[in-house]
Image (cartoon, rainbow, N blue to C red; front, side, top):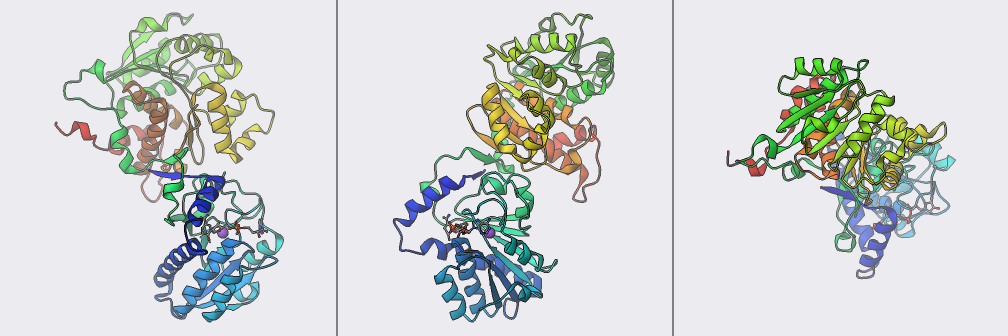
Length: 495
Ligand SMILES: NC(=O)C1=CN([C@@H]2O[C@H](COP(=O)(O)OP(=O)(O)OC[C@H]3O[C@@H](n4cnc5c(N)ncnc54)[C@H](O)[C@@H]3O)[C@@H](O)[C@H]2O)[C@H](O)CC1
Ligand SMILES: [K+]
């Protein structure tokens, strides 16, 4: 599992380590690793370091210092290194090291033919927005040069991933001591390119992280256990309240998402029209048709978790359905029309003790939070902060969908999903996701694990079916791919 720490935490750990080490040790560790990555990229690009042309964009802080010391190492290996100072001063030790190693200082015009650029404009000490001279220098970087960001791409807010104006777009970001949240969340993640993490010894001084990213190897232990003796009820039963005469497909998609994730049973509860469609497509689902007034959802039978909302209309019937489901003492996923009902009547969450997962996109969250017009954009630009705020305000796990899906728990933890792909931006894909999360909840996962593992599997399924070329997919394609996205579970080996 990867984890990230905000700047204030990194600074504190850095101070603790530096107090125990000779001055400059951390910068030398950072510079050595940075030079090694740059050297590798140069060998791949031009076959060697000797004679390769390297430009360095140098701001006035220690980020520039890292870049200058790395440049000195490359110059000693024979690279032709030119540094372009962009601030009022440059790191004195770094400046001397570079010139001693045979590197030079020049102007932005000297960047015209470089093979590789080190972006040492600003790191974790940057204020939002790059200064005009930095923006002008970036324009002189050849379009085909390899760009290596030092610690963070300059212009990206390291704590949030926000970009204000121009920011460096890196091929590789070499980050020191800890991942910064802004490297993992768009738009920052997109600007960072591939991330190379360098351990400079901060580990023992970093607290338990609140922001994590699941990796493939984290999944098996986090999936529901499939005990040898389990019957379908012990494995988990999910109730699905979805679809309306107008949106029948959502019901079919949600049930399919749950079934293909692996579950003991799905009970579908809804109006006659979606119920018929569900029965026809998924004979394995147990279907209950509700009367027109939508009374008595609970009579459908016992379940371990519910999904409510995909394809529901936020009318009186929709309200009655959401109210009944949220009144039950089991975990609930609320999506789509269910979120619209909640936005109009937040009191439906009052008194709820069982876990709740809300799965809004930015527009839905803006309505839930009752934000003024423009709220959606605000959320898209500050995804991390809004996901955490909503989780806190609703006392629910909030999965904020979007270019980097963020899952926030009411206790302040966040998982950023690494498997998202733009091919998932297609109608019905969210309905499948709510079924996946519902199945994991019914299988006994915590709300935070169910939402974050669900998002991971959903993204992975999309990647599997769309392939490396990113072939277009539709939501129903996810059904077939989901079982392949789910890794073997360690507890199932006895089979
Ligand atoms: N964290 C660690 O353990 C280590 C960090 N290292 C590197 O040091 C930087 C942080 O250095 P710092 O001097 O504190 O700040 P910066 O260099 O990021 O920037 C401050 C510098 O830049 C000027 N400035 C601020 N904002 C802007 C802007 N928008 N445009 C232009 N210039 C700006 C400001 O005036 C300051 O002078 C960290 O990222 C690592 O790269 C260590 O070397 C290793 C240990
Ligand atoms: K930088």
